[in-house]
Image (cartoon, rainbow, N blue to C red; front, top):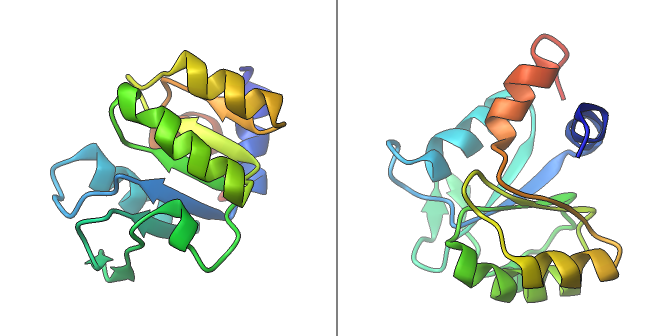
Length: 137
């Protein structure tokens, strides 16, 4: 994926569902969404074990979301990604983003065949800092 494609995603996305968002401020699954919020994005936590994270309502799954999201940002082990991808197919985000260290061939194939842009092994926060600093979302 080119820098222009990543920049376009960051510029044209407002609502991000973060699957696997954590209550632990030391974990990337907490500080990355915190950064995204501070950068003007609307973050919707998805975590079946939490009712609220960072003062935001947490959803049990993508299928429980009550708003349309632009991006599904995944903080789950690679072997759990196909299940998340199946849910994403039902809510039709523009982008399915797997954070650094996360990749699943089956999920990428499934999502791309359905016209959903896929990004993997990249951190939304790092990409935003690298490509967008000073521009805002």
